[in-house]
Amino acid sequence: MCDAQEPPASYPTSASTRDAASDEDLVRRAQQDPAGTAGRRAACALLERYQERVYLWCYRRVRDHELALDLAQDTLLSAYRGLSGFQGRARFSSWLFAIARNRCLSQRRSRSWEREEDADLDLLPGPAGDPGEAVVERQEEERLLALVKRHLEPVEQDALWLRCFEGLPVGEITGLLGIRQPSGARGVLQTARRKLRAALERRADDGREGP
Amino acid sequence: MKEIRCFDASEIAAVLDLGPDDPRRRHLAECPRCRALALSFQEFLAPESVPDGARPAEAVRRLSRVVADETAAPTRAGMGSPAAGGPMGWFGRLWLRPPVRTAWAMAALVVVAGGVFLAVHTRQGREPVLRGPQAAVLALQPVRLEPDGALRLCWAPLAGAERYQVRLYSTALAEVVRLEPVTVPEAVLRRSALPRGIPPGTALLWRVAALRGGDDIAQSPVGTLRAP
Image 1 (cartoon, each protein chain N blue to C red):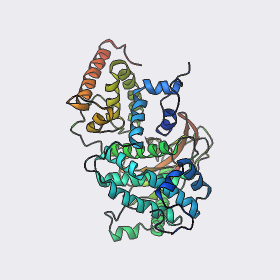
Image 2 (image 1 turned 90 degrees about the horizontal axis):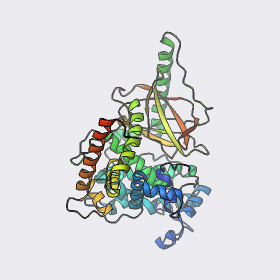
Image 3 (image 1 turned 30 degrees about the vertical axis):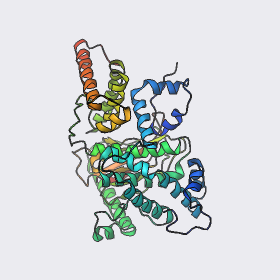
Image 4 (image 1 turned 90 degrees about the vertical axis):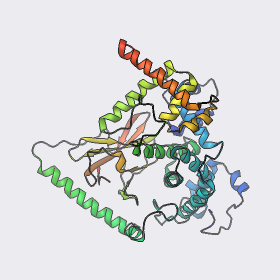
């Protein structure tokens, strides 16, 4: 598709040739000649390399084909527009991941009023509703992190964080963490919730616990 | 020993490549937040399966078209166009075509600037002044209206900045909201990001802070916009 608009004279068209170039090579070519044909085709090849992954990652979070497509498109176009400012301190893959993640988290925040059937972790901070809440939310997240480290098993820690802060659905967490028990990640999350609630109650009782 | 801070999403690939004895790698092993981020990134890089309901073939076809279109025509805006057709009718597309959109943006800026001028000059007493701790070196670019009504806020990238954060203020200079920091020099302001007490069309001020290691290293001048 990179070649669809302008048939190239020297642009590599085979997938194998394209795949031979590293992300860093393509970024460099795109940055060296951003307005030229070679630079634009390098950017195109780079984005095409990731477009399916971006879509699937977004889909796992929103479970809606059209919405995932919008988020993926937004991510890819933002990356293209920001490519000239990409300084290579991060890998291109994780830079693109960060953009996709921000898009999905923003989208998730915008739909926060919708209660999901498995969103039973009411101990956790909600989305920011006013300016002061954002600060409170960050402090709460730090407190929660300390509690989680202290009171939960590693698999419970991972499940909780993936659910609440990475926005992954319960079914996806079950697969990603390889949880084999019949209730999957739901059971793990319920256990985590119970432990956290108990820890919070103890903290409220003695007022000593917490970072 | 120096405490390792949690990683930004854009750093995670580099951290995963470190040796097991590196302190940052040890932090990754011990921190639930960073571990979840790493798992999420690994899932991004190598999805194990196609989830039910996903249509990757169709997605790739449509995304390829958008990407090819965007990268083939550097002078054409192509900003925010729906992946394939989308719900917007011909009337909407006409009014959001780049020249008309620019005219709308200019008109909105004039209205907002007038509103801010009036608001500031009709109030009694000493006015608050919005100043950053550092000299303003981040240049803001004109606010762009997206087809879905959101606003795209862009600025010139700053050397040394790891992330940027958009901060919005009322015309009385009270902070309204801070958007999630981003690594690219742009952010989309959607209605949902604003508190419920800010109706659409409200005049707001915005500025961008450049961040490095959690600290502000520079702030932009103040721009104006209307709440989406």
